Image 1 (cartoon, rainbow, N blue to C red):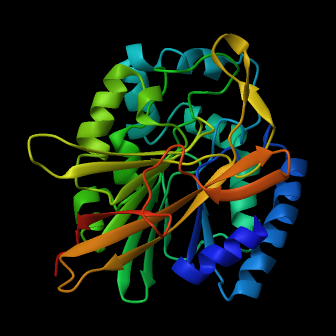
Image 2: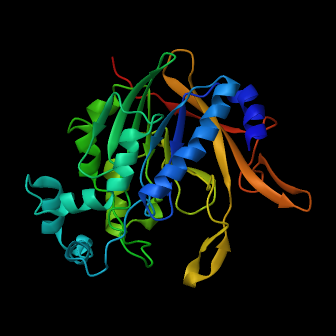
Length: 330
C-alpha cells in the first residue's frame, strides 16, 4: 500500500484530508483505539515522507461502540424508533431527552474520546451535534471553501443481528450541526461532502425517503461517502434532467479477512481505498471531482494494490471524474 501511495501522490497529491466512514475498530474498546493510533501513525509518517500533511475526519460505525445488552431498557425502547414519533421527538427536540442521548453518549464514549485525543483529527472549526459522532467542519483549502458533514447512522444498531432497513439518519441531526439551518450553512462553501457509515439502503423505508428529501437531495452534496458493505462502488443518479446525487462507497482499508454475509455465511472482505481531488473550475460555478479507486488483489505472487477496474470504468490515469455545481453564495 505504501508504494501505491507514492504512485498516487505523483498524480493527485498532495492530500489535505483523509476521510474514514466508520468501523475503525472491531468492538469499540479503548485498547483497539490505541492500536488504531499505532496504525495511523505509520500511515501519517508515510504521508509526511511524500510531502503531505493531511488531517483526518471520521464518523462512527456499528463496530465503534461498546455494545450494551439487548435487554438494556434504552435498547428496547429504541427498537420502537420507527413506530413511535413521540420517541423520536423526545430524543431530538426535548431539552431533557429522558436519558436517551446520555445513554448513547456512554455507548459511543470510547469513539468520541478517541476523536478528542487523536492528533490528526480535525477539531477546529468543528460544530458538534445531537448524537455522538455528529459533526460539521468548515475548511479553507487552497482557495476552496469546503464543508464536511458527518452524521451518526449507527445509533440504532446497538446489538447484533440484521439491521438492514431498520436504521435512520434524521434531518434534525443535519440541522443541529449546521447552526440549526442547513441550507444557509451549506451555502458558505463551494462544495459540501456528507459522511455516514451506512448506505441509504440500510435505512428504514420511511427514514430513507426522508433522508433523500431532507438530508441528501440531489445537488446538495458533491459526494456522499459511506462504507459498511466492505466493497467499493460509485453511483451517480439524476431524475428528470435535474442535478445528480453522487454516492461513493468505500472498501475496507484494513480489518478481518472475512465478514458475515447473508445468513451468517462468511464472505471474503475486499480491501482498498480511494484517493481523489476536488478543484474549482474557471468562474467557480462548477467544481470537478476526480477519484482514483484502488483495490487489493491476491495472486500466486502475493498481494498488491492497484486500480480497481473490477468495479469502476476508469480512464487512462486510473480515475473517473464528474462535475458538480458549487453551492457558495456571496
